[in-house]
Image 1 (cartoon, one colour):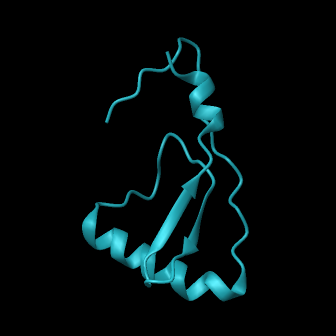
Image 2 (cartoon, rainbow, N blue to C red):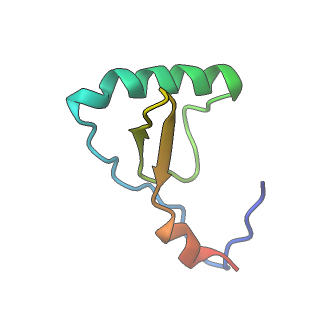
Length: 74
């Protein structure tokens, strides 16, 4: 995916959302799963706050705050 940013837009690195102790193991499992599927880079031009919510069936739903990037898109 390639997003076209408005001229003069500056990359955004948001503060991470805190992870509650209850979700730490679930988050670690999801990180491991995503690392197996995708090549995870240590550094990125942009970083947006994301958190997960476990679903009853054992999977997770991720939520990312894209409000800042939405303002920068053409």
